[in-house]
Image (cartoon, rainbow, N blue to C red; front, side, top):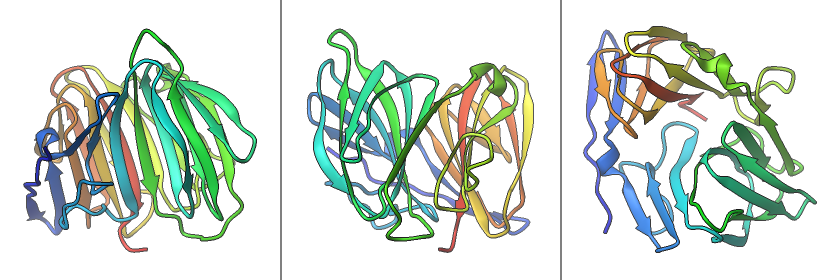
Length: 251
């Protein structure tokens, strides 16, 4: 049974925002897979929640031991996977067979077309991961794959860049003017984030804990999109972990 959406739009000094509480997400429960959809995906459809700018998919997945997604195609999409627990095995049609785990970031530019599968490598524990799709600024690119392992200490009470448009910058790169950051904040800590590009918005997804973003209180697995501003302020109301995704609002 799917949960439908309650969204709130507010304007504060021209700032616009949208709040997606965790409990309003769509849920696909296939037994072996439980997937919470922030935006319309597969059988979950809500016309008010198709995307946030170029951010098209934000799926919060739990896969049972030994189970997974069989080989399936993608094209013209930037796909980012962020493992939260366990080990995820990836195989694709461009020759990659890899394992990604907590601390890794994976990116796949589907471009002209790629087929891949994803399975829980372990037989005794769930794998939990985020799969995120970003609409690219170029179509028909040559498919590519990359993954990196991050130093988690680099996000303690600061924002660690994990995705950018620049292959020479920190993190993995994608075909879009988008920047992703992870932050792990102790209670009482405050951080500011300056937008990288005019016309972009930022979608904040709370991985754990409680945080206030520009006077809006968020809890675990809440999502909060904000645009028509150039700065965010985050205050940790408890020990918290957040993912910030800056994307173009017009593309």
